Length: 392
Image 1 (spheres, rainbow, N blue to C red):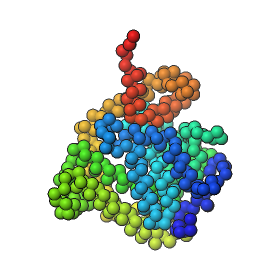
Image 2 (cartoon, helix red, strand yellow; image 1 turned 30 degrees about the vertical axis):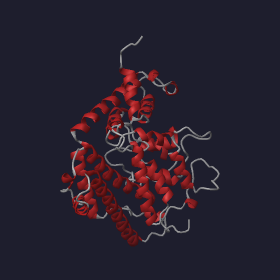
Image 3 (tube, rainbow, N blue to C red; image 1 turned 135 degrees about the horizontal axis):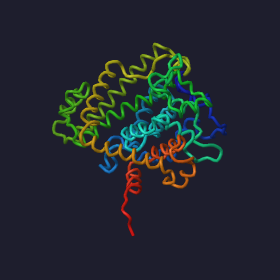
Image 4 (cartoon, rainbow, N blue to C red; image 1 turned 120 degrees about the vertical axis):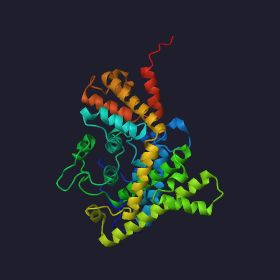
């Protein structure tokens, strides 16, 4: 493409794939990455993986799949305005949640806790495992063999994983990332390219706003409750003034779409200011900038934190949600304990890869199996393994 900014990631200048392949005559390298992600088994499973509400609570609540599609739409919109590679931004948006477990953050917390003796569990690292090892679709390699830029963006879309001295902070790097970068360096001490930064902000915008929508739908709070939240209250007042007689669901939708627009406009404006100040001549300059170039303004970042605080109190810690996440954590713990101790209870194709009961390798195998489960499969598998009723 000739209309991209000089600091955009250029598919023609990609650092390539770990395993060499002929280029597609009809698609760029980043378009091909996007398509491989969409056709992966892990992407299809997102349909029945939770955001906040479990799958059986209603068809209108977001799943990981619908969330990923919303993130992709926002990422493409921002990427287009900033003259970045939209296809790379979209690929990263579609891939960013592939490593999430069943039952949302509750499932991840439970799996991380039982995996502490074996290196822990991290959904970003699990996404890398899926993309480089766990998808078995091609004859020549495991994983999807995506470009360096896509893998870099998946691992670093929330920022560098190492500081300038090579330190990792309070928590060590997940083993999956350590093992992978030992063979294929993703330059963990630098920021990712601008398309990955766009995907990260698009994720933030999407989940804040669809959680407002889902929380209103679930009756966990009302528009009146949102009036005191910075930014949101102004938008609620505007919508009520424009559509005083509209039913609640229409008003809710009008609030959410206006909030998304305001956040997107803020990201675009702040990013343009940062790009103008930096004047990067290449994507390398963005990686070396020392701070993100795609970001909220300080004012919007503060409003974003306030909204997250409201949602944490009124939604994520609501009694109804807590009861379900407590059950979800028990399901994950039970499944891990049984399958780690009795790997012969795994499906045959998985059981053959175990190296005995209670070993670190079997623990990681069981974690891979559980992390790939959808909510409904985890519930059904728990019932199959723990229902002691013997039927004739």
